[in-house]
Image (cartoon, rainbow, N blue to C red; front, side, top):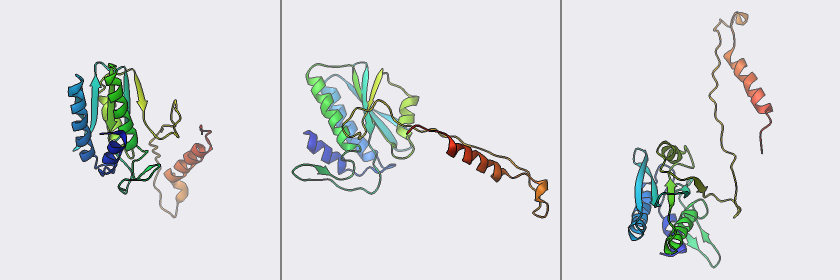
Length: 201
């Protein structure tokens, strides 16, 4: 299957976050065939109930090409004109999956080994696939993560920093508020400090 046909085939499989199973099964079958032809291996990597990543490798991976199978809603089937493929996942990230598979096929045809492909679930919501992959590493010194970056190599990403903040107070009757201590006021003070923090753009 050529690059464009593979892209459209993947796009036409609905895989809104939480519903990646059919895409995963398709990729597992496709990569299992490629693995058999080039002495590699392809496997499911469980992430959550009925959700799994797909990992394929040839030799001991030094580099792994990775992206995600899920899309944001709603599903938009593919269409094509003279210049572009349109639809949900064209660039984020079904087209990237197809490109990575094409690159793998070309590398294998040239005799290159020691790389892997990792396609994860849940990137658009809770990163369930990335967490599963981190809990069960399969080797690899470098990871190239496929995301739409205007065709420029990005050396990092903003990422996320999450905290859970708990404030405690002391209950008091509304007739005697001075006897109490407001947990809400404490949280508002923290929120004001957080909003004033200088953060990278």
